[in-house]
Image 1 (cartoon, rainbow, N blue to C red):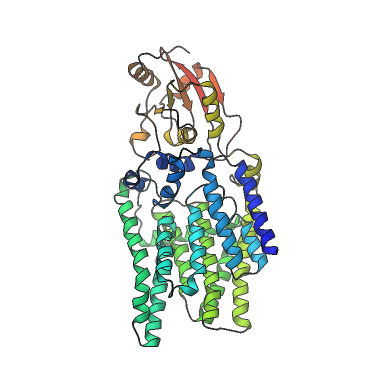
Image 2 (tube, rainbow, N blue to C red):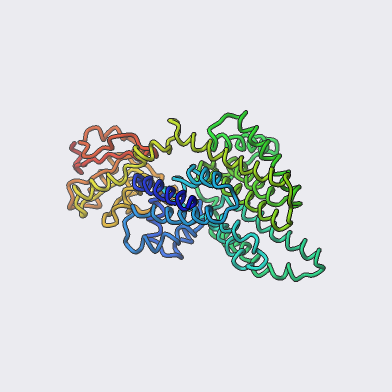
Length: 490
């Protein structure tokens, strides 16, 4: 009954948050790509998006069915609801630890309401923990889960790889103890799947260096170590909202308990998984792309997997005594500490995606702007945007409308982060383009936002604002709509 009450509370709390959430451009871009591209076209475009194709393919049936963009959050909500239910029923943790994790931002809001691919990380890691005791009996299923984890996001690539190596090493040790190759041969039925998934990931991101967004930086060994150490601190500071002193103490306690657990179960691999995943995110932030809170929460799920697997290894090896119990309770305590810190940070005024903003603020004004366009601007009118990613949030709500990007004059769709969508244009050149391409029109509507492609945006001061966002939004998605006379008259 207690577990059922906790689960029901989780569903209600996140349902309230979902009802208050306004989708933003990162969600919109996935929806537009899923709606407009075929699976083969998606594979050709995916390398510039920074995420593997699995989430896009999952969203694709819903987008192509013509469902409203606003329903996209229901997908991540359902996935996290299933993940939370499995965690509550199967995790070997104390009920207080489970509740603390569920109602913290680890399980709540960031993955459950904001419809991104990260909810898949949570689901697959929980399933991998559940099936860890059966990994050598259900090899294909375990390998499939690892392959899917590879396709969930690049930030868990190290975790997936380390879990795969851990599986291989444990099988080889079993072969050694049994004086038989049978355990190794058996796991090959599933172990090839994450390897194949890794190769498929490489195909998806082939020539990703062509992207203006994802560029690999060069560092000397000393600079790389220093920068990675700084980002390792930053990850803990961002998660907990605490200073370096607290984060150092938390890190040292984590290190001690992980080492102690590894010694007690005589297997260092689970600790190696969280350690390697942590360093990978820090190094990735230095060398390729600065990661953010959604990525750091993935580390929390890797940590949950690690502690869960230690419990499984305790049962496998029949390790008893107060020592192992105390160590595992200590690791649970660290999970509870980080959950509590994240909940407190989530309630702080400095957090742009905080609880107060989630309940009472405005995440994006894309939905309201789309409503205004639908009610006041006929579909046959010309709508021009000044920023493709910003306009995508509005466009995702309006499948019946055509938008044009002012920077190049092309019909707008999803953001591909290309140089073409980064082009600039003068206001006079924009007027000339409109006059040339729409000779029957005397006016067009301009959707203005941050990051404008106009070289002289001050010219818009001569025109009447038809619509303007009334407050600041969490993701900077405020809009203005102007009615522009093609003859240049305000």
